[in-house]
Structure formats: structure tokens, C-alpha cells
Length: 609
Image (tube, rainbow, N blue to C red; front, side, top):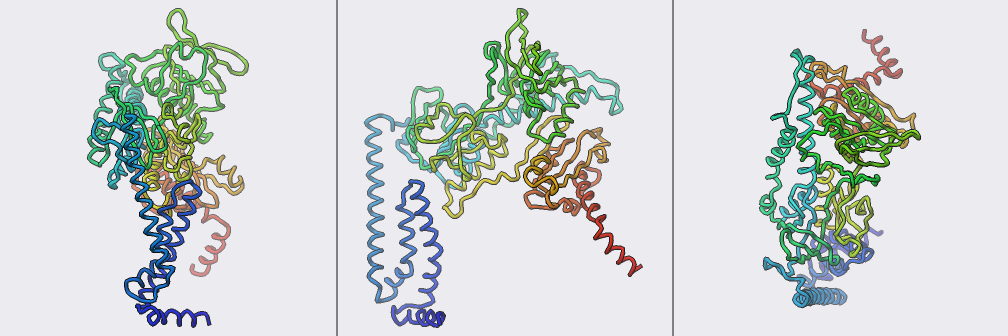
């Protein structure tokens, strides 16, 4: 009955309105989902305190889209259609006039106060996006938006490239390579050679740090301003601060001039800096962080490393290999506390074998300088106090976001000592202001800054239905000690806490069982895979090139593969990657040994034997 009524109505369209019913019906039905999305857009903007003019116009337009067709092609158009069309015209004209009046007012106010003056003739230009910070996240966000054709400005205090290029990833890995070479040279007999005693070029540790800066110089041209200007990005060097939610003031670098810049959207990607622990006397005596360590010209004979995390572990091991007496002071129960407990145990053992002194459950409480110039670190452990002498102190106790001077509180952007607060779309409490990279406090890795910047680009320019939420379920990272540590997903403890111990299965294969590792005398370490109901939920690798090998598990977790699936592709022999297949083989054999398989296979053999 209902379908008959619909059929009669549909076929009568031609007679009632004098149009093709197929065209009218297609427009009518096709507009329904877009009308629904427009209404959702109105509700969303209303809740966020944004203008509802544009989504309202869109909703009304889709509501009468089929009837607008009648105006031009048919007859007997309902009067309410004319009313909505007139309303659309009025709303559109009003919003246009209002926007023009606002821009004129801004222009006049800028001329009165002088704030709108720009030394390059771009007074009061409104950008589609202003990116604050030229590190990993900022470069990706600005470059991506520029390539899309948006009007983009990138504000940077010093030099493009950020922490990763100048004080993080690039210099540390360069330093680690030199330290590893020195270590392998001393172990020449393990490879069939006489003992070697490597010396610094020119008998100066400066040869090591000079190499670091040579590598930086080779790489930094990839982040040169000209590269991004070709992408359509205006690069401005200076110190920014917010004036209001849509304006920033930039104190231009090496100039007393200030420039006011306006934008519809902002991305804060100012990164982070080393956290300085509140230890009595530390600032008075002096210390270094990852920002200064790559500029040292002399090797400290005694180095105290405050903190047993990734930075402390990488640099501490490297300086021990260069010849420093390294003491690592860690407040927690173990070093590398973010990793699986077995990783901490193994790395602590290996560090001790290399001559590092590892002090866990130990707190540095005071530092002073002795008469001979030595730095004395007073520590507490197990209720006892003792002192450590050092020539230099490396503070590696974490990082803190760079938010000083931005005047975020003035524009209502919520933040604290650890992060700028964002939602799943990386929007701050001001929805047109985004944040990406270290400053969000999520994951302080370059690859995650890259990922978050991509999320920002999509959410800043793509309409509501196509917004992208951050997905932190599969986040890989590596610590470049020797052996390397690769990690993705959950540890055994995390999985047991989430799913319950009985439902979690752990597979572990040691590198001693890998033929390539034996050939290269790189047998320290293991692959440890955590599964829930057979599906991989976490992986930890400790071993040669673990930072490279971990990516196979990244894909496996992303695709919700089972452990036995790791045995389904052919890998080259002999390679370190065969350890992945070894884990898959272990799971496959376990399945074959199950009573059910054994029972039915026995019956099969009985029949066909």
C-alpha cells in the first residue's frame, strides 16, 4: 500500500510540476544525506561557538535543491520554496557585507595602532594557516598545506629543522656510529684481527663532534627555507606571540620590527626542550643536555648521567665507548622503564660489562664544585648518602614543552607543564588552533610529529564528515643503544593488565638461534611477541638492527595478524629478519601439536596410508 502511494506520487510529478520525474526524484533523494550532514555541521558549530551561517546556508540549499530545479524547469512551484530561496539570498548578502565591514574595521584599527604595518607590503593579509615552529611537525604541516594550495606562513625562531636535526636524531645517531666503530675496533680479535686501539683524529675529541656537525651540514639543506618557499610557504624568522585568537605578533629575528599576522587556522608545533631537574646546586655548578653535548671539544674523563631513559642510555653508552668513566643515576627501579622489564635487565647487564656504573633507586640531591674544579654529585640510596666525582654532568631526565612566550592563556588555549591539551583531532580548546609534535606531550618522536602534522592538515582543511582522529594503537619506536631496542604495541605486563594473564600468550626467540646473528657475532638480544587470542598486540626486539626489524611487526599489528601469519611469507636466508619467521614457526608448530589437529591428522593417515 505504501509503495503504491509512493509510486503514484512519483509518477504524478511530471503532471503536477511539468518536469521529468526521474531527474526530480534523483535530486530529491540525493540531497537527503547532504542535508543531514549540513544539519550535523550546524549543530557542531553551534556547540563549539563557531559561526553557523555557512552550514545553515548549505542545509537550506540541499533542502530545496530539487525544488530549485522546478523554478527553472517546471511549474506550480510551492511558495515556501521561493521564501527559502529569498532567505538564502538575504543571509548570503548579510554575511558578505558583515565580512567586508569587519575587514574594513580591522584595516582602520591597524592603521590607528600601527599593529597592522608589515615591512613587506602584506598588510592585514589573512592566511589559511600559520604554523608556529619549524621542527619536524611544523615542516610537514606547512609543506603539506602549501602543496595543497593554501596560503601558509611558517614562523620559526632560529633555524628550520628543529631538535631532530640539530640536537636530537641526526647528531646522536652520528655520535653513536663513531662510538660503535671504536668499540668494534677494540674487539678486533673477535673477528680474527689483532687488538686495535683507536685514537681520536689529532688526539682531540673535537674530531668526533666535528664529524657530527659535518653530517648536519649535509642534511640541513633538505630543510632550507627555499625548499618550502617553492611549496608555496612564506617562511618568517622571529619570535611569535598571540594577540587574540586570530592574530599573532612576530618580533622579527635580528630586527626591532614587529609584524602582525592574521590567520583562519593555526598549528602550534614548537617542540620541546630538556627538562632541568630541581637539584640543589645544579645550575650553579653547570651541566649539559642533548643541546650542548654535541658541541664538546674535550672528552670528559668522568661523566655522570642523570636519568636512565633512552637519551641517557644512548649517550651514556657512547661516551663510555669513547673512554669516559660513566655513572648513570636513575631514580626508578630500573633503567629504560618504558620498555619491557626483560629489556631493562639485559641492557643493564650489558652496560655493566662495558664499564658503565648503573645506580638505580638512586636520587641526586645536591651538587657542588670541589676546590680542584671537579663536580661533586651527592646521591641518596637505601637511606644512605654518598658522593660521585665528575668532570661533566649530563641531564637526561625528560623534556618539557616549548610554550613560554606564546601567550596561550590570553587566547584561551589550555596547557600545562607537560603539554598543550588537544582532542582526538589535535584541536586545542580553541578549535581553529591545532597542535602537533612534542608540544602535545603524546609521543616525543620525529615520526610521530610527522604523523600528527598529517592529521592536522586533514582536519584543518577537510569538511566535518572526513575529519581524522589520531590512532595511537600502533606506535613504534627504537632506542639506538647496542644492541638496539625496537618496540611497538603492548609489553607483556601491559597486555596482562588489559586482557588478563590467562588470555595472553608470549612467544620469545633469542638471537642466538639466528644464523646471521651468529655470523656477525651479534647474538645478544631476543624477539618477544605478545598475543591476545592468537592476534599480535605487541612486539619487543632487542638485537642488531632491531630498529629496522620492528617494522614488520608494526604492519602485523596494524592488520590484526595472528602470530602464525608471520610464517606465511618467504624471507631471504641468512638474514636477521628470519627471527620474525622463527616466531611465526613456533606458533605454527604449537597449533599443529594441539590435541584436535593431532587427533584428526592421525585419522587421516589411517585412511590414506
